[in-house]
Length: 455
Ligand SMILES: Cc1cc2nc3c(=O)[nH]c(=O)nc-3n(C[C@H](O)[C@H](O)[C@H](O)COP(=O)(O)OP(=O)(O)OC[C@H]3O[C@@H](n4cnc5c(N)ncnc54)[C@H](O)[C@@H]3O)c2cc1C
Image 1 (spheres, rainbow, N blue to C red):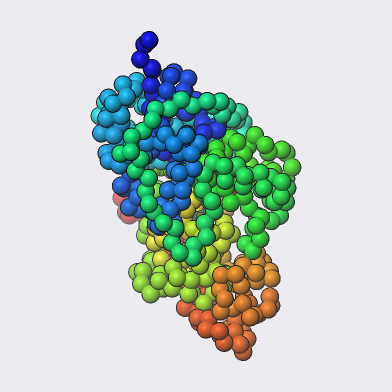
Image 2 (cartoon, protein in one colour):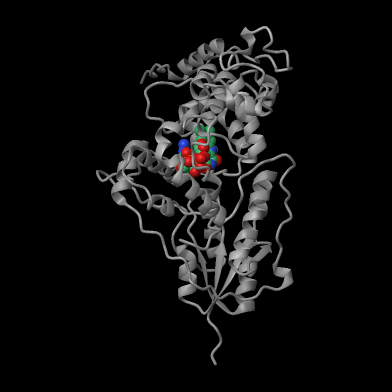
């Protein structure tokens, strides 16, 4: 009998069995696979406790789908892969391609060290770099034309789910599952492929058909809450897209999936914008130094109820509603005059769904230095936003108990009411009306045309 042909399946941001083309490719050219996840010290270091705990749970779920054969390894990726290849006489190493700066560079380094990687599929419906302007084959810089071209490009149907996966049995020393506990009092969505598919099912039979109307309402369960599942690849966007129809609600949902793909594309084409300004002139804007105001923002004590509710939701759930992500981001940059990177770093620490492209560009879009095509400089009014998108104050009441005694009319402006501060809520750290004008003045400074130097 000849020796079994073996391939390594290296899981990274694709912690699922279904609709996983890289896994299918690994299975197709082998008799047995070696499923492996390698803990990356750099990524571990930059992740907060909530994201790590979620990852730990997701690895357990993946392991269960693989009949407890997942190798969870610690160490340099090249050394780990080479050791596994030798030990199991494995031929190929299969991966889903990475496009963001760190993952892409890591994979290139591994290949330079002599470990060949076989790429099949990516975490996107359309891989970054593929959607180009027909006129000059350059990347899009504006979302709406990107979206149209992305639809025209189209995407594959979901890949099949393997009927049977033959795996090698790991030894005890290959089973380095991290023991990262979820911090006490934190309430994060359940991890894993089964949880992702269950959530998708619930969303499809409920909020999806009203998504266009409900997606902005912070206090209701009107969005899919699939972002952490998408981040870790517990579900693929193709699986979502294939079930969408042509109604307004479905179309709006497709457009949101496309925002994720657009930002991945923008970062792929402009890797420096992970930390640096997409619109370089904003580097020259006058910003304040981070200090007490940043701390107040981080801890949900700015005195603006809608902002504070959102920041407390972030810490408590590792997730924040998209509407309030925009509101708190605008507040940090335009009311507190701090650089967007301070906020993005804090989000990186706390978000379970942290995605380098969506985060950096969600921040830059809101800060005004990103891909926003609007001719206006948006300064979100934190009071009006609250009144509009949390009309009854339920969202605020849920996260800011010091305001729970106030009625829908009172809760957005506690400073106007006698008992607004009676339960210990903090006073406003800045006056939005004043800071809005200040922000526009600072914008004007970088807008001013500089006189041309005499030749
Ligand atoms: C300042 C800021 C930072 C952000 N940081 C992240 C981040 O680190 N990770 C992340 O996944 N999203 C980020 N977003 C985008 C968005 O807020 C979240 O994707 C969304 O709130 C997740 O909730 P959901 O799954 O219920 O979304 P749904 O409304 O159900 O949307 C479905 C999916 O579409 C994608 N999507 C929706 N809106 C956006 C958007 N504006 N940009 C990119 N993708 C989108 C997400 O993958 C989301 O899961 C950020 C937005 C802002 C304004």
